[in-house]
Image (tube, rainbow over all chains, first blue to last red; front, side, top):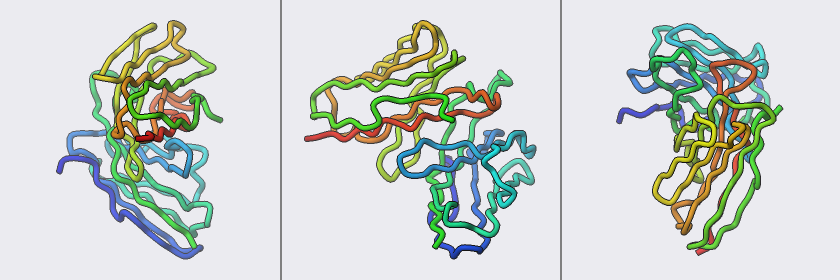
Length: 119
Length: 112
């Protein structure tokens, strides 16, 4: 399967615990995105990597959230001291570079997501 | 705040009928993308529109980009049960060139 994969698919944690999610993008894609989606809403941008560089972060991404893409391949998203408001689906997407520097011009391939429930 | 607004948010469509969903922006968009998310699934890219007034068709789906590049529509003819899901439009965010801003989506339920 050459699609985007995410692990775990589901995570239940207690408030205050730390969680880490992993995303493996399509191998030839150098752009990777993290989104959060809650019920009845569209995906909400969290952060974006081009290769290993984190180029953009949403102002919604509090200090408790950190993302890495150490070798420009897979990425991890860590949430520290989870809160009930963090309960959501966390989606990862990847896209190719193309010939334009404008990342938004390229279709994004989404993974199945990690559903986080904070109790 | 939301950059692209989608109407309606919910639709119940009789199988075999046609329906349209709309996407509106207060600012001019360089391009617009449409995605479909099946219940329990993840968003899947459908199409991208770039040119003013552009119309693209995919079988029973017709996508249109407005002349002013501030609105877009998706029209589906002869609705089938496989059309169930949420349709999202997304445009470049004014917060950054590398991000997409998604609408809230139009959730479509098909009545057999």
